[in-house]
Image 1 (cartoon, rainbow, N blue to C red):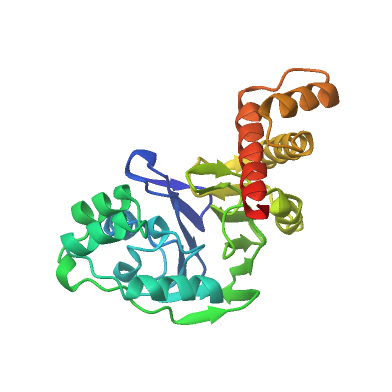
Image 2 (cartoon, rainbow, N blue to C red):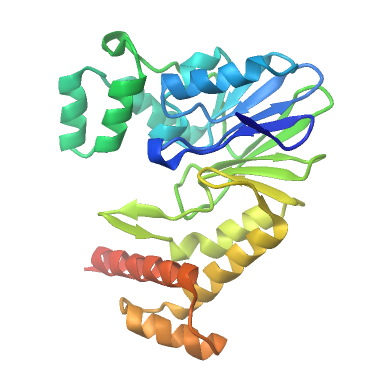
Length: 285
């Protein structure tokens, strides 16, 4: 079931058990735009089924926020003009060369080109896998792009991110809404979940320059400005406290700076920043 934010903006909620991210719909007077293509053919079809019940203009555009499989494997189903940034296009082109039969999928998992969960979703939710191939993106932009849907402008921008190097956000100025994709999350490297400390403040700067009151993230419910400000504050304070590969030292530093124990979220972030320190240390050695 679609969630309605306004007369022009709807979204299909994430389903973490199926690794389905949030998918968005923005409608103008002439056209509609989809945000992210879903993690499978079935995911995309489920979204399209919900859209059919709305009285909105035809879908003309599909924006992929970044090139992680759960955000683009269903993109063929929308029969839309696919828009990506340059780096996202490069990564998707690699996936266009993949084969999707059982033996090929197992080979990709064994070589760590995809996760076992990705293989499972593909096997269960992409029919006719022997002939499946992703479409090529149609519009490739560098830094930013504006799309006018008819009295409804969408601003696309590639931001600096703690998640990927190819994160695109979509801002709808008259609604003060931003679709962030996974751009404000951390990432996993060598089995360690971490936030890239070097990108944290740059990412926040890129996002906060927009006058937004509501934020749609790839794997959460919608957040308002107060919730996002708490999120930024917790990330900044935990990053500031983490200067080594020791979680104990990071917690102690946090307590000195903030005159209290870190809460559950802050403990999670401290661990993620310690992991980033570990990865940086490995890269230096």
